[in-house]
Length: 263
Length: 271
Image (tube, rainbow over all chains, first blue to last red; front, side, top):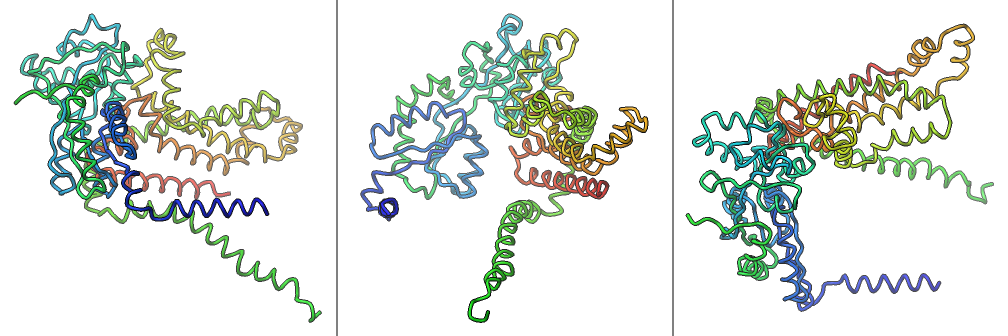
């Protein structure tokens, strides 16, 4: 009997809480949905914390995945306020459909060569890659793989027309995302790979970073934009302001992102 | 008798209406859960898209890698799994039970865990890395790695089915064959295996299907290289990164292949 009554009370409470809340309550309980490229996960988590601290009652819910997956989710009607892509292609596709508004490039990420620490003395630059046994790169369908191909093509002018083919001949696997390229080198299965500087930094001392000369490199540009018809357009704008503020730039730089080269 | 209601009247409503409805509803939910996604896959595609996808340069090599690796992994599973199941079915010791549990473990492991475990065992820095390297063998990124990944995740399905089949075998048959002078190998090959054949075939089909769909462990342990380690599921995932439609068409090919083989095996092993 007592238990039943308590059950009824709990049920009533749940119903009251679940009832449509007043507009004020809705304001203080806002959930800002940020869809971000996987490489932004750690930086955005820190920025989100800061954003929440400045705005009590606002909660930032992040969804980190491949930019292509996020684009597909938004196309299929996922509720997102902000979209930050690691790739202009995905953002431009959404903008063309009117799903994002006025995207702007907010940071850049630079591909680098990573090698097993034991090979640090063997590999001084891109030119040494064909001397290795096993190279792992991204599959051309994912951004890092597409950039890798472009870098190899550019390097052909400097290192010989057959340079891309000589590197490809040593490719043991074309991974589906950049973190798997990193993992294969960290585990020592692969001798070298090409990843973003931000990924290389997360591996600490387990890989050595070899820079790619700027004239051969293809820099990844990261656009950010509010999503059209999002539930919290004002908060979305504020969040983007934070990302593009000096504080946001500092957090991005700390994670290995680089200011975009002037064109 | 007419004063009191017939107790069977209530029961007949239960038997005639409620029970069939409940069983039907519950079954329908599960059938729809499986059928709707397959229907979605098929109905939102077109024959033209399917033919274009078959022309994709990834498809041929992926089919080849898948056919060769699943054949070898299934042969490995049957060749080693049948004796193991025979052993485990006939010995009910504590050790046998422990081995049985161990062999079933991959069923509950997420594929990514299986991939990491395989790397830590057979990778260049894994447990077996140095001895393998001494023999000049490097497993990761090789086709052998694809076979190992498939065998690791698929073996339990066959072994489980084979153990159950051998346990159902009438022990007197074995005893009689032995007393009539049949050698132990002869009992195994001419009595145990032929009688258990339908169950063994079904187990092998299930095991093969699991190997066919293997993705996570292969990706981590064997990598993704067209023509060497890229199986159909990996090709589908790779296509998904650029073109959902191409991935969908490849998925239809895979569903068709799997369905055809499962139907053929069921027909061939019908008791």
